[in-house]
Length: 106
Image (cartoon, rainbow, N blue to C red):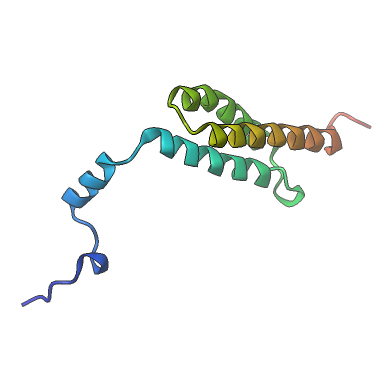
């Protein structure tokens, strides 16, 4: 006979997963996603992992989600922090573009 494990030692059941998902706030997930996108955007601006196209995608994604977060009634402080992070990412992007040699420059 199999020994039954306590809930914290076994994988969640399908029903437990459904209950957990029912409690998830989409706006909260979007805010967390934005924080991750900010981190990825800055990572793509580091000299050893520079990818300006990916950094630009991060900036545009953040711009697109800001109005959604505003309508979703995200905490004003969190929204302000995300907007500031996006602005800082844009400034870092501009600096990275300025220091990147152009392919057509001789």
